[in-house]
Amino acid sequence: MVILAFFTFKYFTTDSETSTEYNSNLIQEQIKSVGKLVVTEGHYSQVLTFKDKNSYFGGLVSFDKKAIVVANSDVSVMYDLRQMQYEIDEKNKTIRILSIPKEEIKISPDIQYYDIEQSKFNEFTGADFNNISKKVKADLVKKIEKSTLKSNAQNRLVSELSKILLVTHSVGWKVEYKGSEIKSEKEFQL
Image 1: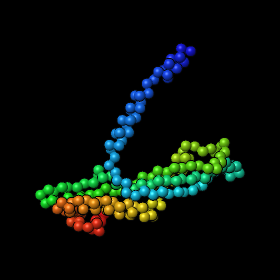
Image 2: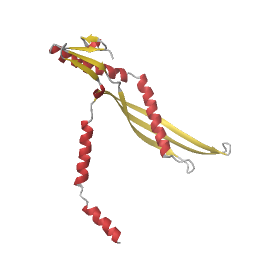
Image 3: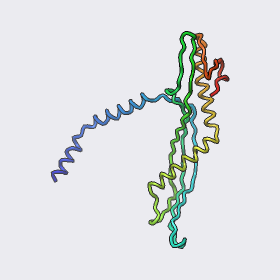
Image 4: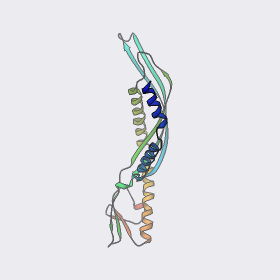
């Protein structure tokens, strides 16, 4: 009884401002560390059927499980501009872009399960749900490779980087990439 009273007292006298301040600081730190340019976003939908069967006694007895899986995924293609390497040559009024980072692809699936059927001897486990999630992401990566999403992202990045050309040319500077001077957006090949 004394222990119950102690925990009840602690529950009602806990100061909630401390945790709110901590969460607020955590969010602020995450915002400071972002240096990525999201250049393209896409949305993909998939419907999959998951089936699994455990058979015993040479297939005479089986325990099945199945589910219909609907995955709506948002895909973002971004570049971490903090990894871009460049030199500024003030004497020759030149900005040399040494390297542009490879694109990063972020897949955010929203997976929902419908029509789940399972047996007591073959139930869905956490491993099953993890495997389904991995399968959805793997299928999506294949679709992205076949789509124009990555090439659209590269074109969009070139468009953003070409804004550097406008600024540098307007103040009498030049931009070099891969050892050549870049005078127009068309010359900017990744």
